[in-house]
Figure 1: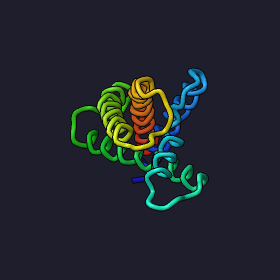
Figure 2: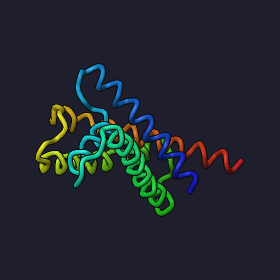
Figure 3: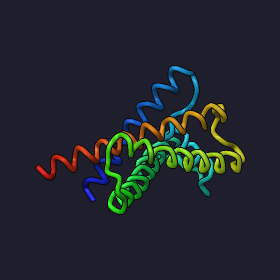
Length: 149
């Protein structure tokens, strides 16, 4: 379980760094934890402070990363593929598609969605999940190699 946790932290952190850099470079709101926080705040049954919503956005972002890494772990244990950059890319693609579908559903169904260029964000999200998948897989491979030596 600790391996999944470390891979989740690495993959989610590198994805987040990628998103923050792209957000700054393109002057767009691509920062997933902040978007999640706004989404949580605006859908909560009672008003919650922005600072609490921001923290919940970060927690949700890392929890989602852990969920994906649990699926990746199961995949590697039940397939002939092994963790590494290639399988991370392979897993990042469906993760990106799933992330895109989830955000499309959430943003389109929200009465007051967070402000962002929807089309640019969805395209960005796909690439960010590729970063997540490769980062998680390479971390998994390194940890496995270190724990076997």
